Amino acid sequence: MPDEVRHDGRGVVIRTVAETGSTNADMAALARTGLGEGVWLRAERQTAGRGRQGRDWVSPPGNLYASTLIRQRPTDPAPATLGMVAAVALDEAVRVYVRDAPLMLKWPNDLLLGGAKLSGILLERVEDAVVVGIGVNLAHRPDLPERPTTSLAEHGTAVAPADFADTLAEAFARWLGLWRSGGVVPIRARWLDRAHPTGTALAARLPDGSVLEGLFAGLDDDGALTLRLAGGGTRVIHAADVFQL
Image 1 (cartoon, rainbow, N blue to C red):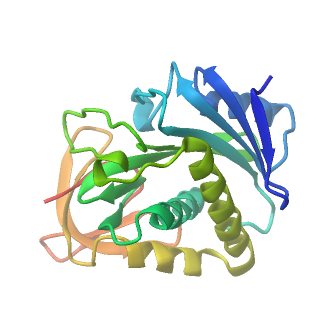
Image 2 (image 1 turned 180 degrees about the vertical axis):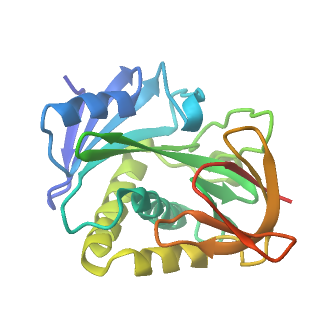
C-alpha cells in the first residue's frame, strides 16, 4: 500500500511509497489490472531502477522517481510520440524552478542542464497502455562513464521530490491533453524549440554498435531522429544513443 496519496483536484493522483524496485515495473503491473489514467506512482528510493536499454538507474533518496500510464485510444497519435509529450512536460516543470538555467532537450529522452544530463525518460508498452517513467536528479547525480551529469542542487536549487512531482504531473496532464486535441504538430514544435538547433553535429550509436555521424535535421512525424549525412542523404533513426560532437 502507498505511504501517501495526494489528489490535485483535477483528477490526478500521486501515490508515494518509501521504497520499491522500480516504479515502471509497478505501474506495468497495475496497468495489467486495468488501472486508468491520471495516477502517478512515486518512490522515495528504488532498488532496481531502470533506464533505457536495460541500464541501471541509480536511485538514492532525494531525487524524483515516478511513473504514470496512458491508455491508448483509437484517435490518439502514435504511442511513440508520448516520449515528446513527456519531454516537453519535464522541460516545463524544471523551468518552474530554474527559469534562467541553460536547459536543452536532446533526443531521444534527455533533458540537459548546462550541457549535462539532468534526467531521463523511459517508455514501455503494456498491452493497450504506455507506461511513462521519469527520473530527475534533484539532489544527487550519478557518475556515468560516457557523459557528464548534473543535478538541480548543483545549480543552487533545492526542490522536494513531492513538490516536483506535483508540478510535473500538472504539466504532463496539460501537454497530454494537447497531444490528444491538437495532434503531434504542436508537441513536436515545442520539442524542437527546446532542443539543440537544426544543423547541430551529432553521433548516433545504433543498437548494433555502429556509429553514424550527421547533422540534426529535425524529427519525423513519429518523433524519430532525422540526420543529414555527409553525402547529402538523410537517415531516420528510431533507436540510438546520441551524443553532440
